[in-house]
Length: 151
Image 1: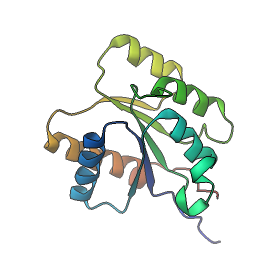
Image 2: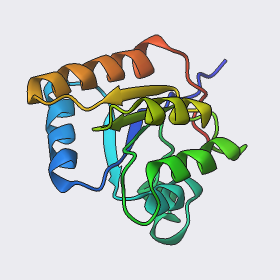
Image 3: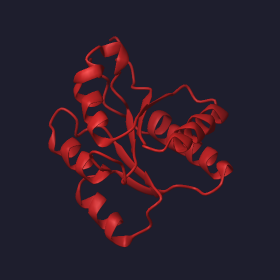
């Protein structure tokens, strides 16, 4: 029986360019066989996932095995994007980890109500971010079984 390829793409929705650069550097330090792709807001996230607009070509938008989602973004915030992702039969199986500066109990409760898989406050130090990326990569891509990518 032919094995279906496992997803090896992390899609990060993050509006801060410095945070995107730090996340890429942290993932590079981990030396994981995972590709990190970025979108800058919730609208772009949904366009990417649904292959709309500039993401219509499959090679420009491979299906992610994990979404890292910031809550506070322009155009469509993380809460709105999460609500739409988890309401979509096509997208709801993609794990979503909220990675944000928020530590508010109301945010934590709300994102779990909306169907997020995890809530993580962004580490302050780069070393903490490296450790977090290592942990996320190992857990989501080496430990758990994810649905095979389609299209």
